[in-house]
Image (cartoon, rainbow, N blue to C red; front, side, top):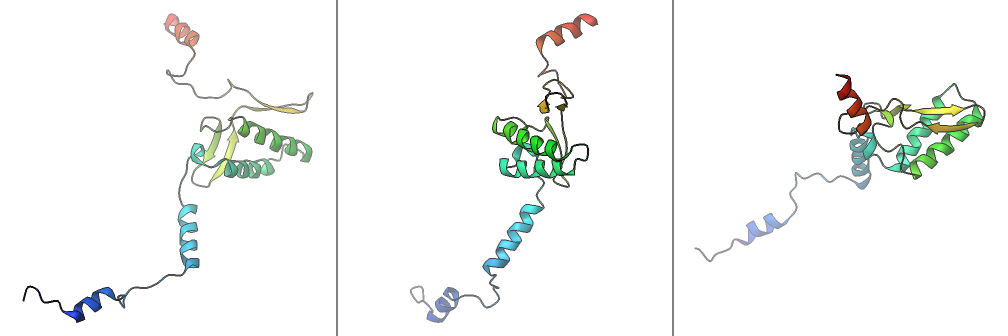
Length: 143
């Protein structure tokens, strides 16, 4: 009894179950695309190519710049990303729900030189950990 193997049960276990549904490769790809589209990803975790695309969409929506200024703005954004700027959450206001850029913090356009710049000190939130030492000393003396 202990050494006996039922051949019918072995064949049934090895064969594919009849209730299992097979999905095609196209269905799997669409499921994966939908799953990645609904993920909420922070700005710092997005791939640089997608960052450039989202920033270009943001620039196209800006109505205060003409076409030449938008072209310069796009070139400057590409240059900034290549120089490892505009990669932190503090530098870009990004809406996670919509997946859209709301604002580039500290961007300035100089009319005379016709160039864009990003000011390093303006509107960036500072905490006690990342404040310069002079500001910490001055604030403690003011008390």
